[in-house]
Each structure stands twice: as structure tokens, then as C-alpha cells.
Image 1 (spheres, rainbow, N blue to C red):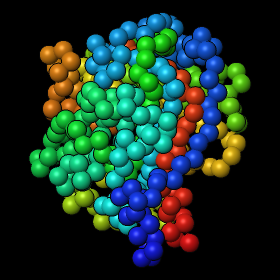
Image 2 (cartoon, rainbow, N blue to C red; image 1 turned 135 degrees about the horizontal axis):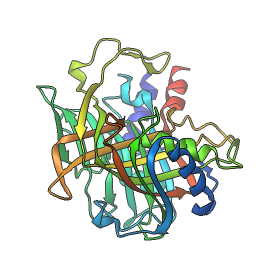
Image 3 (cartoon, one colour; image 1 turned 180 degrees about the vertical axis):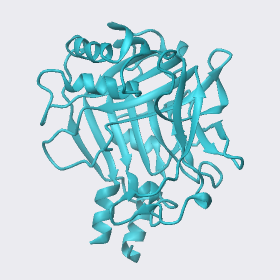
Amino acid sequence: MTDTATTKVRDIVEGKEEYPIKTKKFWHPELDVIAPFVKQELEQNFKNVSVQVVESPDLTKFGCAAPGLGGNAKLVEGGGEPFNHDFSYNKEIIFKMERMARLAGHGPGSYLQGAGAACAAQLRGHIGELVPCLVVGGNNLTKAARVGVKKEAIIEEDKTLMCGGISNIYMCNGEKEKVLEVKVSCRTGEQASLTQVIRAGLKNVPGVGGEKQLGLGGVFRMESGSVKAHVNPDFEVLPANYYDRDQMKCVKDFLQFYSFSAPLLCFTCLWTEEPQDGPTLNLRGSGEHTHFWGEKNGLEFDPSAGGHYHGDTSPEQVSYTGYFSLAGEVVRIWDAVEQKLGDRD
């Protein structure tokens, strides 16, 4: 980067300049409209399926920081792959979740949950996976996962309100409203990711496509079974040239993979596709992002289990219960691809 570009990035990080922001609307039908299509797709992948629209239970008793998923719900994506992996950015970029929330129209009392990167500034020089779960100015249950010296997973509480170079966060008022309740067990299909099965169901809703897309946030517990997961190792052990700066993608294996046993509490953001109207947002290509922490003795978190969710590794044993709600808007904060292309030009 040029000196001018470096200074601009630093000014944005430090708050001297605001995060660049772009927004698009999601289609927001009643949950009853989407429920049959989610159920149908789940039935193609699980032996036992229940999908209902219900009044939200108190999600603080489920392990969340707020009672519900309702009220001005939005999906917020921060940064992107260049900020997380390109050495021109990844040791400099820090997001403040309170700043992100304010730009998305959410202040004190709002509820944030989802998945993101944990940066070196918040992990004493380490990097890893972030599991945001907090009420702005209130209850903060956020966890961060990192890789230890013996390649073990280490999960710890994180009260910094920071986030690394990539994130997908569901933001709302935390109000109890109707939610989509999903209960499934015994996977029979090939798709191991619950969130990708739900996403496939949403794509089948009549009318979805082009400018008309759906965004969903939620929390689910893997109650039995085991999961495939990863945690991003520290900078010092990453392979040379694992990230191609021109292609803006990782080209070598670098993640530390794990298998963890249930119970696991998972927080997700997912969407069918980017709405096609207006400027491109360069949303995450997978269309979903899910992080989790392990549990023991009820809702107590397990400091040896957590990270990025890929899917189950135990088809016959797996079971889930989850609660989901639609978002009305996607808020794109500081698009890393756009920043990279501008700096390169």
C-alpha cells in the first residue's frame, strides 16, 4: 500500500474516519411463509424433523445474552478475506463492535451475536475465532478460540468488544417475538452442515432470487453427536504464501481442524444470496457463517471446545434444537475487497 492508503486505513481503525458502509434490503415475509420450505429441505437430510413458528422462549435460558431475536433485525458483515489474511492489513485492522452496531442503527441495549475473527489486539498477540454474544452496554458472553502451543483449542471469555478483519453479526433489539423453531436428529443426507440445509430450504421459497433475497440469524444447540470445526492458528505458524494477495484467497491449507463432542452452542448468520440491486457488497461466498463454544454442567462454557462450525461428523447420533428469525436488511461495513482493489489501483 502507498503511505496515503496506509494512513487512511489507520485513521479508519482509530475512528478518525468512519467505517465505510453500504446497505441493501432483504425480503421479509412472515415466518409462516418460509417454514414449509425449510421443513421440506430438512426432511431430505434428517430422519426426524420438527419446524414450527412459535413465540420465542427466553433465550437467556438457552445460553444467549438477550431474551429474543426480535426488533430491527439486521445482518452485518464487516471486512472480508483481505483484512483477515493479507499482511498489508491483517495486523492493523481492528473493528469495534459498538461502532459497527451504531452504524447499523443499534445502540445501548441492542443484542449482537454471530461469528468473526479474533484479532491479535484482543488475544495478547494471538489470533483465532470470535463468538460474539453480547448486549451493547450490558451482558457480554462473547468467547474467543485460539490454538495453543500443543495445537489444542483454547476458549476464553472476551470482554474487549473488538473483532478482527472478518465478521458476520446478527443485530437486533433482543426482543421476544415469534421465531422459527427447528428440531432435527439422525442425519440421512450428505450435507453435514445444518445451516447450509436451512439455506437451501430458503432458496426454494417462491419468489426468492435477483433483488429478492432472504437473510436469517439464529442460535442452535448441537445436543448430541460431534462436529467438524477449525480455529485459525497464530501468524507465526502459518505457511509461507498461504494467501494469494492478487487472487484475494487462501491457496494453501493452514487451518487447525478439530472434532468436538456435544453439547455445543452455535450462533449463525446466513442468507440466500446477495440482493442484486445496487452496488456489490462482496458478501462472504459461503452464504453463511457459524461459530460456537462447547458447554458443560448446563450453560457453563467448556474452555477446550469452540471455533468455526463446518457440520456434524456423526450422522446417526446428531441432534439439534435451534431458534431463527429473519433480518430486514444487510449492512456491509468496510468492504475489504473494495478497499483492497482501491489501494491496488
